[in-house]
Image (cartoon, rainbow, N blue to C red; front, side):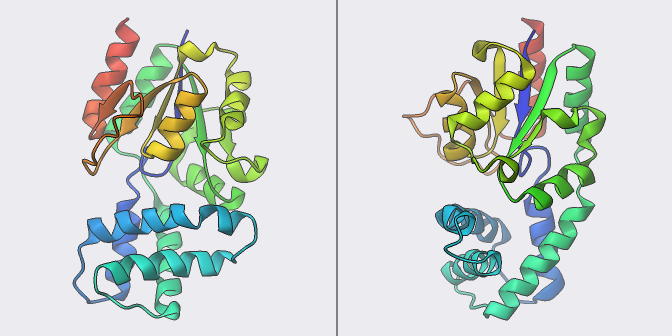
Length: 232
């Protein structure tokens, strides 16, 4: 038996969609949305720990990542504008949907009696709201969903992967982790002895020093990779 464990953001759904909708609903200024989104993710990682250990409030954290990302693209947003965008972005995240291909992956796993789980970084209430909006509990048991905010441990800390391994009761060489972040998802899975599948939607350069089992640039490629795993 094998286990598939998923990240949430930019894995089970494409995070750029609610981000783009939030920006366009508030501003008329032209901006490269893909670059803006990727920069916001970069700045999110820069201050992630500071936001979790109380060095900055969540509002300060959200303002920082949006302002800095916009600034890099020559757009100046006030703190009020950045916070308004964050609020609109969060509102849009309550309307999340998985693609038909992602649903097909989960159905295929269910048909093959594969054990499924989720490990996601973020505040408890916020991440649970996303899983609810996506309706993942149709395929993944609630007890097999780990939100870092509930444990005080964030990916890539190997302990959060060990908690999941205990839940699924599978050896590490039978576990696959699927995520979009090299630092959090792929490195974390490697440290736990799991195989990692990198969702590289934005065609970023693959780091040579990181061991990646497979790379998928879109949901269709991911489906094909997982289908081949099940055929082994």
